[in-house]
Length: 388
Image 1 (cartoon, one colour):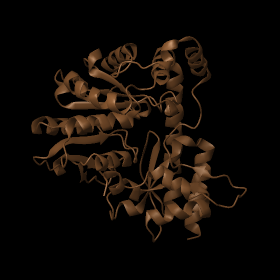
Image 2: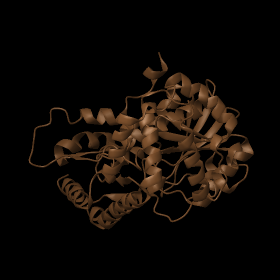
Image 3: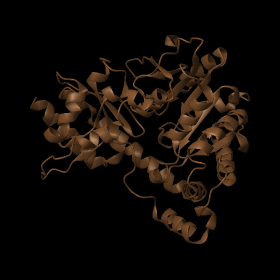
């Protein structure tokens, strides 16, 4: 059996099949299944991209495997400023989305049968890639607040990395700075990597740097940092991500990236750079809007609680809800489109098979609906519980 056969089907694509053949109703479907902006980039960026396509021949050619030098330099400078550390241009690589950055990191770290520690609930594409790379995923439990416990880490002679996603996908949880630092210490002492995925860092509610890791002058010995431009500038279809690591690791990653895609799409890279240069005020407005939607979810929590739902965590694009029904979250999610006009993903898609906690939870990607939409979602969930 092939490794791809051994892993599960893409969850978002599976969920979309649940709405095939549903009868049309006056109530629109609330699609909170996928964490992706549904609107195009802002018009100034669209205009800049159109000009790139028409007037910049380099947009249509292969570029350096590790990315446009100008974009790498801008990321190095901005991250150094934001985190209070020192990141050099050669320590930045551009990838075709953050998923590819993760795949490249695993390719540089792991051999057949090696182990990667993932907190549960995990980002399903991380687990899928581990499966397809022949890497064993070692689940790390989280507490009632969905925070992983450093004391629960068990490292073997096959462990190659600990993976953290903060703000978390699927739970939205923002990991405290001291918790992230504790995992970095564990990784350093064990001689393994800490892969830190901060795809949603632009929507972290905390002011300032969310962790101190880049302030360590030797950060590159341990840290592999991942990022995506998909959420910040609505560039999901242009596949632009970043991997920040030691120059030695990026030299190994270059082999993987050259083999898989040769280079990240030029238009997406140029658009990301233009966004960094020109859209800081616009991005601040996007962040404020997402934080307001988060506040709307928090304000809805008491109403949901009265109906038996429990808001376990909320942040960035996500809310993680414990449901009140005598059925698994997988069964509940499959009937939600028909019974409530809601498409959401079950916790079972973010955990090992048979995990009892996963069977009690749903992930809600609330960033795709506005404040009135969150009110509508709340009402539908309350009504569903009342009719159970």
